[in-house]
Image (cartoon, rainbow, N blue to C red; front, side, top):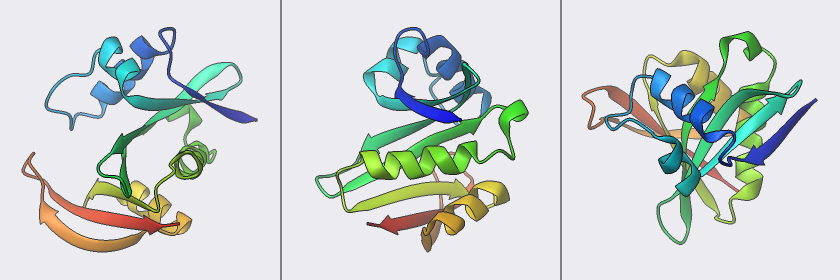
Length: 136
């Protein structure tokens, strides 16, 4: 069974390492930064299985960020669970997710949940990316 919790001081160092390990953040995340933003962890078998961030962009839209699942927990629906749970937690009618074009597992996951690709662009890191939109 998987549960989801808001990141606290106990989880923050491990979550910061997970986010930074992804390689696409320009500014490294610290445990303090993780706890100040809306990040959540998936707990499975009393271990952190993955994490996800939710950033408010406006009064009507949130952005899903930093979906990370530890390798030993992949292929167990942890990523799907995280995305579905933050959709429930967001009070806003629209959610977006920016995904690099070569991140096929994330693209597949978002499409499966109901996100639609709305635009492609070159992000600030120089990567080709797509924006996916979810409407509640």
